[in-house]
Image (cartoon, rainbow, N blue to C red; front, top):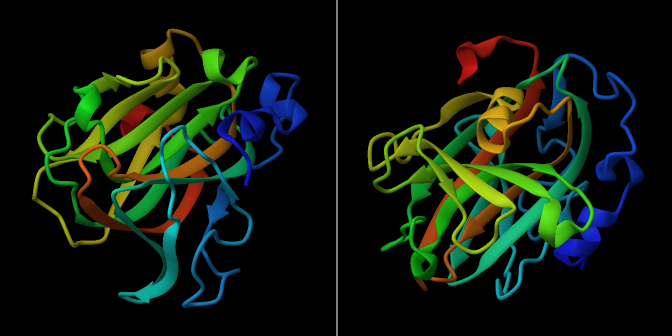
Length: 232
């Protein structure tokens, strides 16, 4: 498996040397899970392990059919498991990150505003690797939080490279398939103070290693779309 640093350092365009303009094209499919066999477990094809210090990843992931759609089921029990995929997307053409998810369980006692309980059920990251990776890379995680208001921006209590944006909260909607859309370029400006014209990497993560609890979520289709700022 690749360490977090090694993964971020792999691939020249991830380090700001430039991805081909429009490399991903408009209406870009990032993942449909159609390339994986239903029932396959572990890291799915096209993704890589993305290890975090102290995470003790179990990669309890399974490709499933659920409510008529192919999805990746993510479960966590006292571990922090993350996978990542190179995207090389042009945010000037496709600034909207869209995904389907079904969150089934939230980690008991989780609170992203406290270092000791900084856990989250399945969530998706937009990732901008920069050198040196551990000091300068930028990650925005879109999370379902037990209590924080939607729209809250939470800087990670563990690393200065990560910030979270709450897109859902509480019990309402748990167990249902829901569609999300975020204007990633605008979120980058809001969180980091400058514009992003490319999205090099997307990651999926589930984290219960601080609360030593359990969580479960599913992710369906993930894509980048053309669009305007109504997707916040």
